[in-house]
Amino acid sequence: MIFNTRIVNKIALLAFLVTGLGAMVAPAQAQLPPWTRFKLENGLEVLVVENHLTPIVTIEIAVKNGSFTEPPEYNGLSHLYEHMFFTANSVDTTEDDFLNRVDNLGIVYNGQTHEELVDYFFTLPKQNFEPGLDFMATAITSPLFKQDDLHKQREVVLGEFDRNEALPLFKFGRKMEDAVWDGWVSRKDPLGQRLTIKTATREKMLTIMGKYYIPNNSLLTISGDVTLEQVKALVPKYFMKWKSGPDPFVANPPQRVPPLKQPAFVLDTVDDPRCIVKVQWHGPSIGLDDKATYVADVFSYIITQSEHPFSKSLLESGLVQGLNFWYYTQRYVGPITADIITTPEHLDEAMKVFWAQLAKFDDPKYFTDEEFETAKNALRTQTLYRAEKLSAFSQDLSFWWAAAGLDYYERYLDDLSKITRQDIADYIHKYVQNKPYVLGVALSKSAAIVTAPSLQKLGNPLMQQHP
Image (cartoon, rainbow, N blue to C red):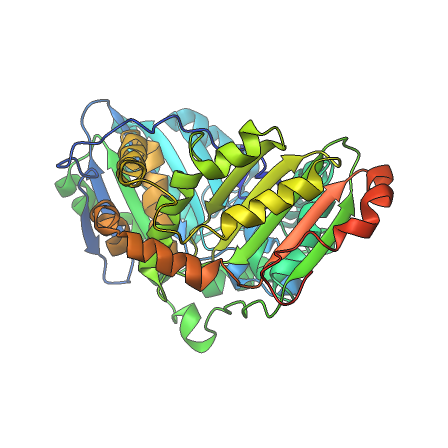
């Protein structure tokens, strides 16, 4: 069986979002599906989301682990640990045993590694809920990390690395990450480093397990055709054997990436007739500036709509063929990114227009009241629409629990409606306009030679220092 591990790979994020939801309005009273929370004595937080439409249950475990916990010598090992989860444990003592149990219980399963989260889920028929709960508890509490499994999964993860490395923009993406997260890139790259993965040991897996895979650093979400009473009766039976441990972030608080000090320029060559441009800033962090994180979502939605001047001035003019502007929510510094696809011939003019538009971001007339309200309603609709699919909703609950806390997620829809124009202006001033950034350009070797004299002039003309 192949498991389709979805790892956040920022290198591939030039696949631009097209929402088409500008005119959609969510009913004001619509809210996220309700959930119930309780906590076991060992510190495990449990969420229950009841939905009795289909006889299916999803059991999901989320752990606050990921690249944000990784110094260079561990970079990529949270992802490798995720793969090792689906091998042998104290009951299913071989990988074949594990997979046979998956088949016998009718489980669809997967895992994900992000910067600030690793999670695992089983979706199965409701009649198999209790044995599925037993299976998940065994897998999370007693992995064996057998040497032959470790060797096999190292090769699987290295295969993922090879596939990513084969992407045309991989090297460019790595150069950008090195510049944006200067000296701290291991904390921001879940894919990791080849040598670290290749030399991973069982001892390192055990270190990760002992430090992060403890109930008081984890969330168990049960969603689907179950009742709260069932969950409260069964979860302690299987998960109270999981021993709690010291909070991993008290003795070793997570490292927050230092601010960029000045603009920087990254150049790479790529076998592509187009010119790929990426501009990145350090954006807001959950816990330090919560409001700015959802203000960023609203502003990005506004300016990336096809009728907005930002998009029209670049796309309709023919200067660029692809354009996006977006923010990625994180507790430990979320990046703000502009992605542009143009041609070497149009590069200079496209960047002049881009910077001219950026200078208008704080202009009260830069967007209309209708665009402002449409953006808030569209984001609300997207959030509610995604929550209709229980498996997606469970994953969203895990993501927000780890990055922001469930109170943030629970307030998100209401907080969207409270955003003002002044909030957007404050966000632009604090994080974008006249703030240090990294400008990256990837183009063919021949185009780089021709355009080399002008490349250093592509930076923001309003900044005193240029890349």
